[in-house]
Amino acid sequence: MTGTEPRLVEVRRNLLKDNDLRARALRQRFRTAGVRVVSVVSSPGAGKTTLLAALLQNLTQQLRVAALVGDLATDNDARRLAASGAPTRQITTGTVCHLEARMIEQALEGWELAELDLLLIENVGNLVCPSAYDLGEDVRLVLAAVTEGEDKPLKYPTIFNTADLAVITKCDLAEAAGCDLDLLRHNIEAVRPGMPVRLVSARSGLGMAELQHAVAA
Amino acid sequence: MHELSLAMSLVEGVEAECAARGGLRVRAVYLEMGELSGVHEDALRFAYEMACQGTELEGSRLAATHTGGSGLQITALEVDP
Image (tube, rainbow over all chains, first blue to last red; front, side, top):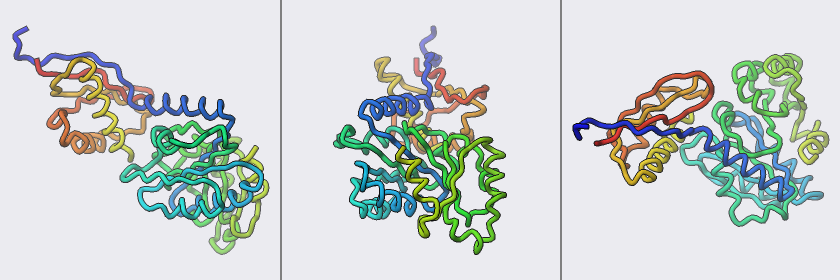
């Protein structure tokens, strides 16, 4: 050792694992408290907030439901969801393009989980990054609107592979948007064989009762 | 696309490792990037520089090697003698 050469210190620190560990702890907390957690991912504008607002309207009649919603800025979505009467908190991520388990932990502070039956989490509108971050949820919904084109699942296969249920939204506009629903379903099947798919329209109410059942179950 | 938040956890991770060893002056951070991690090296380098600003790590170098798998792991720190 001359005392001038830099030295190497061996370290083993997995960066992506940090989120997985936090998500695992969250999942355990949710399970212990008996709260079911359902998250929603999609591109911006696919209808996450409208869908959740419609679901909350009915779910609050039968269950103790709360919602967390992530955006880069504004609390517009939290205000929309709070209209249902459900406790709602906005997570503003600043420049971060997805929600992380750590943000969920922080947003839950002060909430008594045992007093909830269901927690809904709306992720930041993004079909790329949320796929790498487990939030401790039981079920993840991925939305694809009929206005987005039938090939969305082919372009963003990873997010379809990290979700449990695909929901095709704005189906009342399918004809006007020229969307081939069979082709869209076929493309979902191509990237994620066997994935359950539901067709809904929050505006017309199509498929909403069935979706509500799947979310609450 | 989420390289900025990864870079921020990278800086936090290195700071924690340094603190645990009684304070080290870091010159370089050695990182293993899994092919399936979805992390883009150029974007991470760019974000790393930003994340280091105003911290003890400002001016440090990121030395990345590519491996299989989906991990992103700090393997070593090159520090002042």
